[in-house]
Each structure stands twice: as structure tokens, then as C-alpha cells.
Image (tube, rainbow, N blue to C red):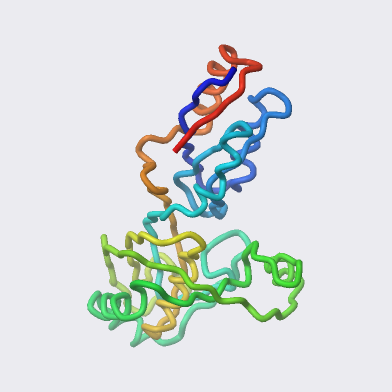
Length: 253
């Protein structure tokens, strides 16, 4: 006997790994129940994850991984980092090009986004990523200080929408909160690194940039507004499995 379960839409908060979030839910499930998800979010990121529960759902993992995704990104100019974002492992380097930072305008940013970040592009995978090269995760080589040739792959940026741009910079040194910031929504294909877009955008405008915030708002037709916090998701699973313990679970797209 099988029962239909709706996909579990989860809100991952900042500061935890995707693995930790999934593991919190796994504790609620009957032993040996399979669980997976629709794509990792970095610890500094927050937002939507689709949790796949049961053998039939986890078999569909590749389908979910291939869905387009929407993000709201905060990008800070005038600073770079080894991880392309601001995280516990990030080493920040502030630009000395005060004039370039001060004069950075919305028109500059729009022009570069339109010319270089629309449609199919070739993106270099960041050194701090889980992509494997010669059987080893890139981030492990990066932590060890080893230089590895970074692979590139084709991705698609279907659209971008600028939500806000602020530049009140007046020469403050090493103050990330005083640097120009951009808030922008991207719709992208699978495998797109938004922090690589931030890094490349910063290089092209001449100031450097890092990803300073990221929220995933949509995966295919699934939306963040319909998702549950971890605590509410655990309550949902507790009540559901009290009713259908031992019953097979399936869900179809």
C-alpha cells in the first residue's frame, strides 16, 4: 500500500549546512526511510529546499536538480574574497581603488549585467565548491592550498531584475557596511554559482565584489512562501508518520 505525500518545502536558515537541515528531519522519520533534497545551499545562504522522502521520491532527485531556480542576491562592491562570498572561511581583501568605488553607478552595473550575464554563458566553478576534479572535492584542495585547474561549464541566466542599488561610499577603509551594494533577483539554470556571478561582476566593473547575502525563492514551480521552518517541518513529519507508519510513500510531479 502507498500513500501520496506532497513535497516537503523547507526554509533553510542562514548559518547551517544543508546536510544539517536534512539530518534534523531524518531524525523524525522511521529507520531506513530514504531522504534527499533538491540542491545544496551554502551555510551563508537561506531559502527554499525541496525535501524528498521515501524511495519513490528520492528516485526523482535528478528531476528536481534540473529545475530552474530563482535567487535574491546581495552583492557588495569594493571587496573580494577567496570564497567569492562572506562566510566563516572567507578571507576578505579590500580594494584601494577609492575613485572607482565612489563613482560606481547603477548604469555601470546594468550595462555589465546586460552584456555579460544574460543567456547561455561559460562559468568557471569556484575553488571553494564541492565539484570533483580527479576524484577530489575542490574545496578540499583549496583548504590544503593546492592549485587546481578549475573547470568551466555552460549555464543559463534566464533573467535578472535589479531590486535596489546603494552607493554612499566616501572613502571609508575596510568598512564593508559602507561599500556600494546591489540587490538583484536572478533566474538561472541548474549548476549556477551566484557567488561566481558576484565575483565576475565585480571584476568587470573594476571594483571587485563579493556575494554578501543569498536567498533561494523558487525551484521550478515551488515557492519559498509555501515552505515550512525546520521546527514546523518536524511537527508535520511527526503527525504524518504517526498516521502512516510502515506505509510506502510516493509522489509524482
